[in-house]
Image 1: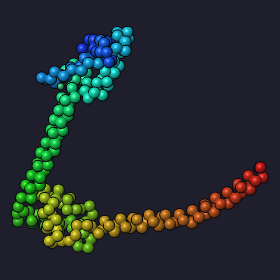
Image 2 (image 1 turned 90 degrees about the vertical axis):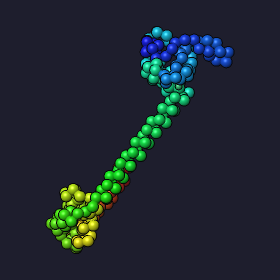
Image 3 (image 1 turned 90 degrees about the horizontal axis):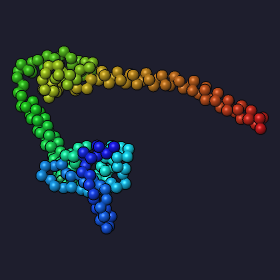
Image 4 (image 1 turned 60 degrees about the vertical axis):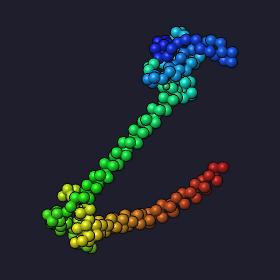
Length: 222
Ligand SMILES: [Zn+2]
């Protein structure tokens, strides 16, 4: 039924074709405050109250008007003419742009505040002691699982402080122990793969053999 449509659009006669004769149609009005824009659309071909689904009719009208740049809503006040629709879009873009800028400013402010914090002698002592605990030596680097970031989080101090003290007093961050372990794992995996080689060769030779006898059999079958 057209109940949905009749509350969303204004049913009336609208001019149609070159001679502008009046036919059944609707008028959609822009729902933006202080906007007078309206657009007529002939919907002459649609069944009127003879089982035509209002939702389908709404979709038909919406599609037609959206081709003309309108934004069609589900209520009479939700329609927007092309001008008001693009104004609303720009406003949304501007709002999200402003939000991004504000976020960026807040972030850099946080970084500045963090950097502005002065490391006290007590901070130095605590960080040094922690590094002394978890850093093995210049050759091995950090003990398993430890990094500048983890130390910083653990102590609740800026990561830059940890980096500074580590470089001054200990050595590189990268744990050679972890790297060595990864290399050993890769080596083991490689050995496993190499071990499969003889079996693969054997199976490939077998496949050759099977292929040959299959060819013989097929010759006989012809
Ligand atoms: Zn408008």
